[in-house]
Length: 308
Image 1 (cartoon, rainbow, N blue to C red):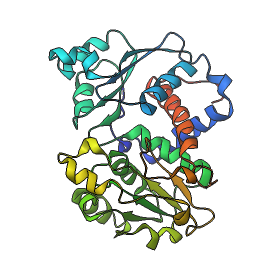
Image 2 (image 1 turned 180 degrees about the vertical axis):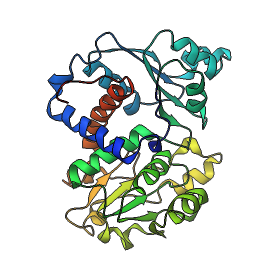
Image 3 (image 1 turned 45 degrees about the vertical axis):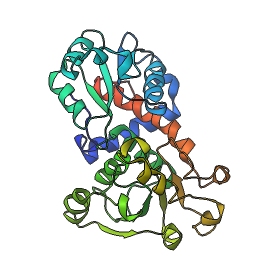
């Protein structure tokens, strides 16, 4: 039995195989329509989610399976004080696989240590968000044709953004990757990512404060929102939340082949005028998320489809 708690739980070879499977699902969905008949996915979401939770549910339903679970801690026995360990032991009696989102870093790891079914980390605090990373990688590979030799700008909240941390960890395993880290000083990438990931692996990067200065040299711009729920001080949040807004004027400075991605939800960091730009692919990104989660469910359940 395997779990997915971090993007690094999959080797590069396993990751390529998973993305190949997701691409086949995209091209031949009918082949997989009954792959999970009789299987059940439990969605254990201790904090709010729209895209991730519904994407997991859509993935399992597309495979012919069923879904059960809860969408907030208040609607579960956690409100009565039940531990994550006890919850996963109970859920293991009801479902075949589970996706867990939790505000505390490491909660899915605790669940996996006590679980009788595969556990997928659907986001744990400001730590990791591996299935969003798989979605991001599929988007890049599908639209750019490669996962190497790319200049990737990451803009916004780089301190608390779990999608950012997971994406960097995954991409440093490919060759020719350069990061341009764009943020206010207060929201710079954590030192452990800078030192233990980028510098330790000799990955080229630069840190800047102005998006306009670097957007013209990017192959990909990954926008993130400034997350109110990660701040302890509301005044600091209000001061920083509008630091970086991508609009048509900034897009005019970018290359014609640069892609704009975003893990969503967005607040106002990408102006709606950018939505009609063919380089804006964040809604395509959402669709790729369904395919990659379908592939992940099949992989962790060890379900093989002939000719897949």
